[in-house]
Length: 532
Image (cartoon, rainbow, N blue to C red; front, side, top):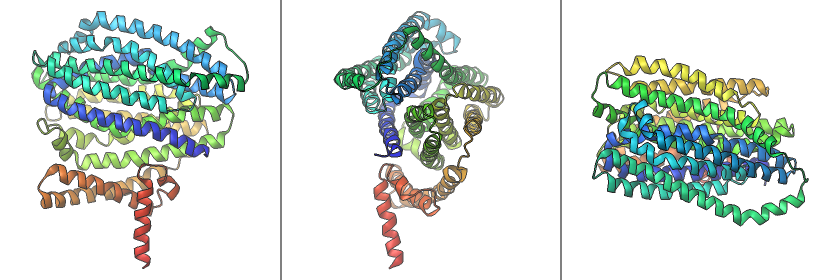
């Protein structure tokens, strides 16, 4: 298998797992929203964002850092050194994760008041042990990714989400009978249970693979490292990654505080919670689905680029960057346009009892493009040892977002839509900054026409046809759900046909994406008809 196909296969495994995980997330958020409503979603999200911040501070940089360090050692055939990195990271991450758990557990009430959402106390409390569980799981995932094996991460993610979905809905159903705050906490309890089973799955995979891992010890060089040196290496590698991610997470916390404070100037607490619930429970959940593909590609590209970069194989590095950018934008741009065109119809299908928030989705869908760009550029920069750049980009993005929030959200006519507009500009600045610095650092000229212009033209054409065909399907069948599903199915086919005709994608590219061979078959069929 060629290295390009190997990289894309790894990315595809994570992308498909991420899509399945997001799909399961959609499935359980539907009954969860039905149980706790937009107000409950606001309480749930307030607690979850705080948990995410502490998770990032304790372990978010570890998978990327460990996978990078492990891949560098395996590229040099130092399998023993790679395994020592894994063992040291377990001790380090476990310690930090446990301290974070204690801090959140005993400070839950104070944190709830600080973020301006007192009702999120139970949600924060129930999420506290999850930080420790995920910190351990992050090390196992990073180790396997460094070995260029994305299957363990994918399997554990799917198992984690299955248990998360089941227990979140079940516990919310039981607890919401008492009050909506406890119902939201029931949803967050499922997160911890899911994480426990995800950890259990990847630990079992590790012990199953342990004999193969030990066999590699005899094949490579026998070079061990000092534990303190490894700890310093992990910290030096992960801290810039954590800072960059933490800035975005801290921005989300500031965003939440500002949103709630600004909204309360024009609305009461319940109305503010409802609007915030529409933002986080609908806009954020839906727009992060296509971005999960970019995240998967970024996760897969770090060890691939790092291993080639350490060997100074710069041509291969540039080739992988081009592939990653192209695949990310080819999938993200049409998702953004399609969601913008069909935002109202999507919400009507997914949340029939709480369909509000269509303006957020219609206006904010464009953020998918820039968030995906920022994600993939961050992965590339981490792979080429430019770990500080994403943090700087995130800081510039935050400088744009925070003042925009204040001026837009306090306007009663704009209100919650202001948070969406500021998010668009935040990721636009961060993504473009990352891309410019990346291009300068490795003297790389990105093919903007290939990865942006052509997919955008094909997506705009698809968007116009989406709007037309939805109206036609709805007239024909009279049902939103059926008309929407048929419209989306047709839109996917039309998009790839237009992209192919524009020269934005080749046969070999189509073969690397889901249903690509079927699309090739249909294109060839159309060509044969024209020739006849």
